[in-house]
Amino acid sequence: MNDILPDVSATWQLVESIVCDVIESYGYREIRLPVLEHTEVFARAIGDATDIVEKEMYTFRDRNDESLTMRPEATAGMVRAGITNGLFHNQRQKLWTLGPMFRYEKPQKGRYRQFHQFDVEAMGYAGPDIDAELIIMCARMWERLGLSRLSLEINTLGSPQTREKYREELVSYFSGVKSQLDEDSIRRLGKNPLRILDSKNPEMQELVAAAPVMTDYLDAESAAHFDGLKSILDAAGVAFEVNPRLVRGLDYYNLTVFEWITDALGSQGAVCAGGRYDGLVEKLGGRSTPAIGWAMGAERLVALYEACGGEAGNSAPDVYVVAAGDGAFAAGMKLAEQLRDVIAGLKVELNLGGGSFKSQLKRADKSGAAYAVILGEDEIARNEAGLKPLRTGEDQTSVALDELANALAERLKG
Ligand code: ATP
Ligand code: MG
Image (cartoon, rainbow, N blue to C red; front, side, top):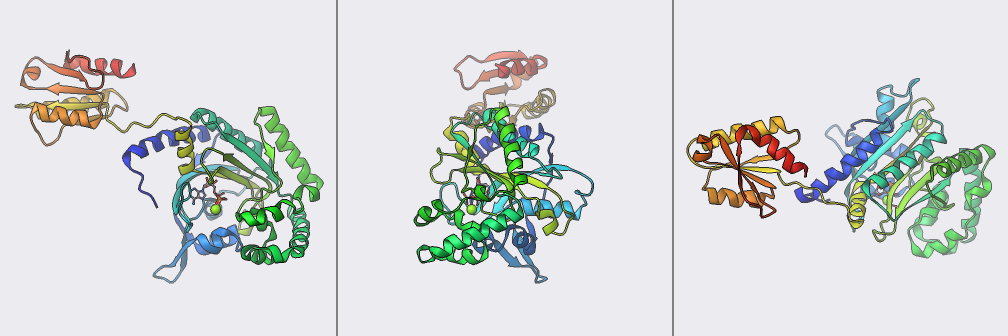
């Protein structure tokens, strides 16, 4: 679990504001969810034979002996919240959330035990138009963030019936090569053979590559849904590749699944992943509701943003107010408040704890501020302030107090 320090969080804020902007520009509304849910919510939704439920959840008993889990992902909680609050009754919902997720994983670059996800979900939409829109939204984000080196893989898992037929084919195939399977795969063979396709063990890759593919078992309706998605993506100019091995790590998906992958971050290349989960609302106790969503890893997104040369966020103040001498602090405080009033969003740091001009200017410089505004007894007597550029080597000038906000706004714009 990481501390995200101020220099880094400034870049996070920048990236977050762009991502949230794009999400809301498609009509999604924010929902804020608890970090804790009853363990049952995740166990039922995500599925017993998944990495998450088998070995990654932080689960504990509370003082009332109830089993609670720190959310490993957002979809299950989002669906639970929608059912609890009646959000899906004769309504369609487009929702998003952002926050920390917890998984007991082997920590490494791009893989942490507390990480953050942007999560976007649409309930009540049968698609494939919304499937495409959710993907196109990502492409717009990459563009706004200046990201390259991302590619899109899509697949369809078909209907539950297709999946059942395919499942039988897989069981028969993998049973035939059982002696070559690793321990995880043997366990999954009985419980959920599709998950063997998601194996990360390099020794399993050859067997996985030779396994039957879902697309050969697709029913007509699922095939039409998939074709619909592909033609909307084509029309929007969003390039994709069909990867028939893409099954995703969670059990609740059907029809469309997709992943945005980068080759710029080493082995943890999945930046954003999602899919359709038409059965989940009913499975968690609600009325049958079609739904689809995606989750994006914020750590990986920020890392990719940096790898693509994205501008760093700036946590420094714009202005540092230096005030020394009799009555200067009170005047400085008044001026700082005025500047905050007049220029929206201006970051003003007022010197606190006194000190000589020299020591205050040292602090001003260290703060990273672009300008120092200097108030001494002389300036106050003349109704002026000194305006000193701290980053450019330009000379200090004197500005009338009632001109100062304008002068600053003008200079900071450039
Ligand atoms: P992976 O195959 O990398 O384990 P996953 O299939 O478990 O990913 P999802 O549950 O689909 O991942 O989560 C969506 C996104 O969240 C991932 O694409 C990734 O960007 C991010 N993510 C998942 N787990 C972690 C983690 N432990 N640390 C950082 N980011 C993560
Ligand atoms: Mg995982």
